[in-house]
Image: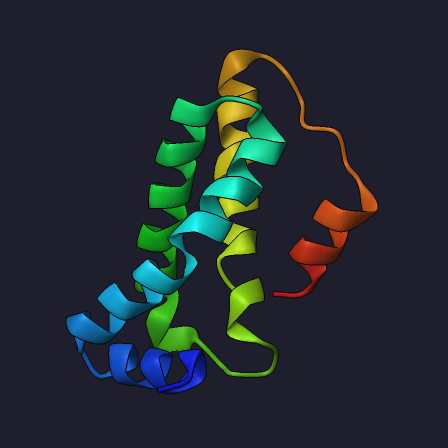
Length: 103
């Protein structure tokens, strides 16, 4: 199944489809968060939070872009919150700005 098909299944309550989404994208979500935070443990927390936000947003998911861009918005938001809690601000780069706009 494609990511988009899995997300459609998640929209109707199929948590095994969500598990497949997580398994497919957990490494890239962690890598993305790690690049933002430069902290491996914090990146794990941020990636996990991003997937929880994806699950929460599943009813509103519209396949207008590749799914792989979808978790980056929540990861970026969670990463920014983590930076804010630490008193620092993440640097805006074209890559992170583009990922945010892709949502």
